[in-house]
Length: 225
Image (cartoon, rainbow, N blue to C red; front, side, top):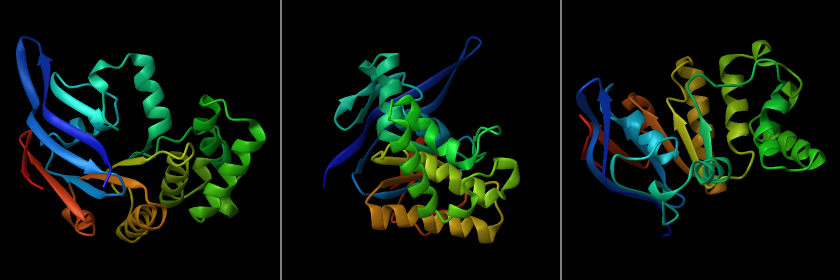
């Protein structure tokens, strides 16, 4: 299998005044293309820090994070932004949709930043909304949709630039259990049917139990997976 993500002895240490607070303590793992992986652990385990590093939103204090074999610690800010825009689709617990934009416009937005022509991005956005079961909500604003529908828009937006990696941070955290299961089924289907590498960060082991592989974190260290 093709190696997509690798952590090599990764440390992340935050400065709190004069005190060093390690969030990750020398963790190493690999994720291959097409895997469905959960990163799990209680609050304070380091899983959110891990997500930020996978998403190239941050860089490690020590060690290496490689995406497609390239060490992101050596990237400039513009190179990190390009990586995030093209290779990684983000799905957040709080949806992070722009309230003044319709579902269609929210999905189009990542393609605007990649300079994709208007007719092409509109066509793709419509196809993606159809794929997540929201063809009837294309012109609705986020406030006019349920939590589950907003998360489906967020998933469609994450797919806009056809990234290899879908990174979901507590994607069911603001949803009821029935809607949460539907969102998890959708993410699992993206992995199964569309060969996306899907990484789900969660503290909820009930959510994680349907995933093929789990990386368990505690106190900044891997304790399983």
